[in-house]
Length: 354
Image (tube, rainbow, N blue to C red; front, side):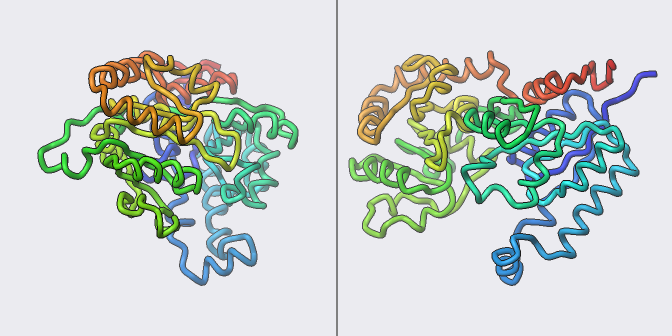
């Protein structure tokens, strides 16, 4: 008897999150998927909740227990084949062991750093991570750290783009003043990023910076004039990459990062990708042909100067970068296929073959 693969997914459900795009990948493969969104439980904390979490390192007890009880009840009623958890800061080890006792394959994906960036972990996750059958990471440097920590089956997969969101969008006449610029960056403020972007601002390029915590940069920075003061997502982000002559792809300084989701999202939106030079970036794209790279803020400013003046070359590289991510099939659906193959789960049109 043919059996459709059933997936119980836990993670952020807002459109534009990589968890939502991964869940959509299961759907596109024909799987039966049920999602428990963490958004309603663990976002938009009140001030008392934040104070409580700072001391206890946990959300309010009632909320935490209700969340895990919901997962347990859904396991019982839905009887999934896979429990797929993205980030899972508050999914307990007991829940993972309970799923495994039911014969469910448990898979964890962390889109950030478990070990080097303590903002993106918890004591609950530190304990639970060892219980998962399989852990998946998009950070090369995390693979060995997971194994040293005691995780036996660790799969590295690259980030991806979501074709439902990340694609070229023609700007309207009303949108051109909002998104057209020499240089754009989308992401969280980190001081090395601010220093480099301030060099671009000081060189009198038109610049737009979107993301969080940019109000924390030094007041003396000229960059302050170019910070939009809010994060940006989905089609609006695609318009940013479409409107900029150059879209900068910084990597975090919190660890030894090699590539990010922007690596694929910027070219998929038709943008020109100028990223931090790493072995992975140079393996994905041919330098000066499908994208370009920099290793210092001085080189970044030099490349910005060159590409903002050379429209034909910039357009050709952006087009080849777009062609490359399409040819690579660097989509979340493709990444889900990778995870299933690593998990030794054979699937055809959503139907289990084993």
